[in-house]
Image 1 (cartoon, rainbow, N blue to C red):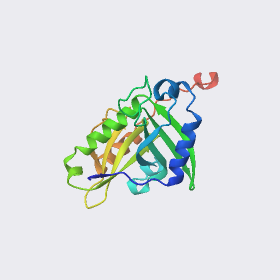
Image 2: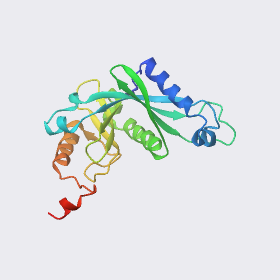
Image 3: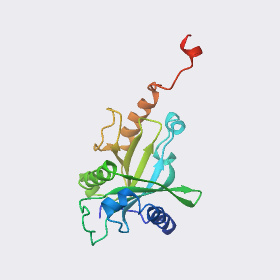
Image 4: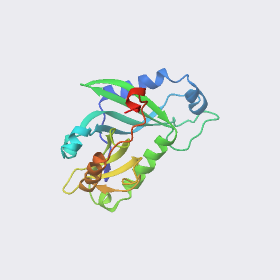
Length: 206
């Protein structure tokens, strides 16, 4: 198989399930899951690349492991009235020095977009002829860019496919080599950031 899903630590998966179980009685779980226990799939490790590393010209090897992410689906027996189309949500567990903490669950477009981006990755010729580990790369300081990181397990470049991006310079669903991606990211990091935070009357009068 060209794309490899890494095996997450058992403690990470247990923490994801624990956090989700606590949410099972909320409106989302009752309406969409029918109260059934969620099913985790497509585990991928989350890495972050901060502004200091980007501005210093660092490569992807400077990205820091931040946790694990899972797609949430339904059990094989779909509850009455529930939908059986695609993943329903995304669950994330943070890694705090080897201690896993349930971080968040996001339903809606993000799960669908992640699944679609994985499908795009699986069809790339380079991926089909090689071996890549699927990861997630997050650049929180630059237009809130989240991307699939296809770590090349052999020779050649890693590939990056943005899942979501507020920048027209990095297109969601488009494949970039790691060098091209980082070149664009460094250019984005140099652009001024629009600041719409409230200003004091004193600063406004200057």
